Amino acid sequence: MSLDAPHLMGRVDASGMKIGIAVSRFNAEITEALLAGARSALKEHGSADADVMVVHVPGAFELGTIAAKMADSGRFDAIVCLGCVIRGDTAHFDYVCQGAMEAIGKIAQRGDVGVGNGVLTLDTVEQARARIGGAHGHKGEEAALTAVEVAYQLKLIEQALEA
Image 1 (tube, rainbow, N blue to C red):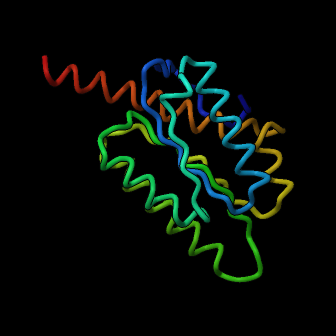
Image 2: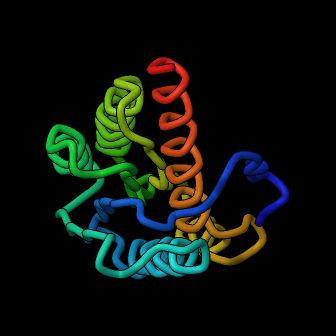
């Protein structure tokens, strides 16, 4: 894990969890590496391939649509959003980033599913590469494991409220 990553402290055991992953096709070199890292981390922490559903979307802006549908289904314990938006010469970057983050944030705020935000918002491809196993760790792994930890904490809260 990178030096700037949050330290996962809760239970990071994906065994038996149903996990949805929404991944952007835009900047596929980066997003497919994010996906590979997420899948690897989930498997390392007990997840079975059959318990993971991956849905590819055109770009980061569309991640929220798919993640919301997954959350609304009630079939997923955790949802991981993976994307990469690299700044260009226009304001499009700002609008895509804002839309993606707001949509993902709304799902997280619901409090009924663990959400991992692995959407990179960067100035250069080099910065993106540093976040898929380089100097800044692997953000796909971190997003997946964060979603699992939050899902576990949500289950603990539900159990406490039922007691």
